[in-house]
Image (tube, rainbow, N blue to C red):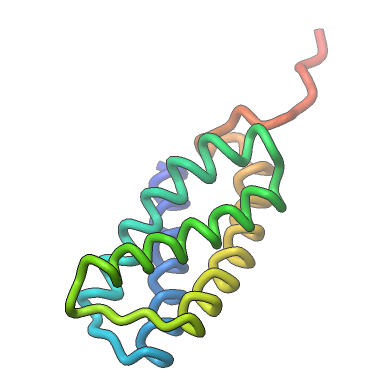
Length: 126
């Protein structure tokens, strides 16, 4: 249950970041903002939190999540006539995602009840 709540928090923060970057800067619709937020959340969780974070650490994973989020928005821009992502919007989105993911990763690493819980921790005392 805590993993679901963490993913919901991640979705909300990604939605807020995409709203700030792509509605206030680029004047996109809420539907397209939601699409970018959902795809970005899923990919950042699967790649950033499950693969990159446990093997490389928080800073690299956070920067990677920001770049991946901007890449998702750029790909949506390429394949959609209803979404426009400027370079300024992409940079703002990547920066907000990187900072939010850095803080989110700190929570993931500290809370052992949230998946993934296979971070670099000390082995249990015998």
